[in-house]
Amino acid sequence: MFGSDLLRRLSIRSFALLRIRGASNWLIPEELVPAHSSVYPEDATRLLSVGANGGDISIIKYNPSRDTLVHASVYSEPNFQPSWQSVHPVERDILYSVDEANPGGLVSFHLDRGSGTLRKLSRSNGINGTVSIAIQNNLVVVAAYLGQSVQAFETNDQGDISNPRDTFTYSLNQPGTDPERQEAPHPHQALIDPSGRFIVVPDLGADLLRLYAINGTRISELPAVPIPPGSGPRHGHFLELDLPIARQTMFYLVTELRNSVIVYTVDYPKTGSMTFSRVQEIDTLPGIDTRNATVPPNAGEIVISNDKRFLYVSNRNDFTFKNRAYGPSDSIALYKIDCETGLLTFVKLMEAGGIMPRHFSFDPSNEYVAIALQLSDVVVMYRRNAATGEFIAPEYDETRITIPNKPVCIQWL
Image (cartoon, rainbow, N blue to C red):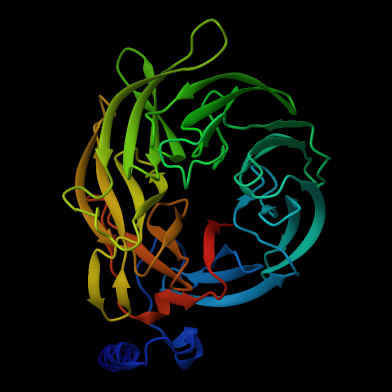
């Protein structure tokens, strides 16, 4: 029996490697794909949401033991631009999505895990161009890129959404260092600091970190933190270092226009705010000259592994990897984090699996990473080597799945 089972597995793998790239996943039934070792029980599936700029939120299923991605459902409505999704921190079956259209807003859904379908619960219109969501308890804060604003909403464990409770809209006296991209303020992300007392919003157009104090379901503005001119701050990530004497909070900021990561130490003075002290800046494309590029590359998402040892940044339109079987590929930059100082050391560039990796995310175990490739219309799944931090290339095409209409956000549900 062992010999025949081995031959069956080898034949299936051979067939998988010979299948036409880009063909539908049903050519290999999921139950016939051989199993791999995984932290999850055999044949357990994980759901992921994929937001696409073209108007869809797709729910897909990933089987870790068999390395297969399949479609579960698609939610779509006219003039809907769901460019970012976040899961309710307690009620995990409630999913929130921005609407980047005009009018923009915030939408909530209920996820049926059995069928993998979404049911719309509530919507609150806001300022156009919302691109990011931060949730804490009953507070939801969004950043509106085109609307030049930050808004706060109230929600509950049923997914209801209030009208905007607070709105902060900004303007510039004159364009920034990059007049094409910094003609106006562009809040790009909202994130909550580790203390749970503050909201931080990188503003790409104004070269600022905008700060807000949290008071229940309301927020109040604090003095902003200036960023080097022309940086274009996009997204950030907090990290707490467990040092022998005291815990040190770090903040890692990816800049879209300078293609760098700026590292800050964060302190909490008795004045009731936050201070950011810059300690390092490091390139996301080290050693690569992009000055003559037809389309300039731009750094995208930033993620830290849950073991606090590695940091990852996606590069878009760098085309570092050429002539791959699926075409050219942009890159994911890998850095090692010093556990005592929080400083970064560049390790290598890894294949993203296609073009424009606007967003990527790890599963809770950090064994798997899902990457949304906006201009390839594909989501790809990699395994991660926990010792080295590197991504492990998939063995065959069942870990790539077509998502039409420009996938830009992927979240584990």
